[in-house]
Image (cartoon, rainbow, N blue to C red; front, side, top):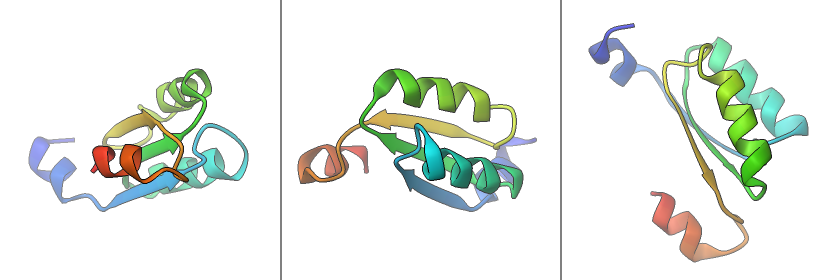
Length: 77
């Protein structure tokens, strides 16, 4: 995918993206062509999920943080 088409892809931020419903939602969004921002507390599981999704999505970025705390979320954006 070219840089211009990659930048025109929709973007989705998925919380709880390291397992369960969160990772399944991220996988479906990847199949639909979304660029993904993945957020979860467990860095190891989050990185594993990101690696699995890298080939399916135009772009994947992962950030380990607790979305219950404002500062890490503000830093992410």
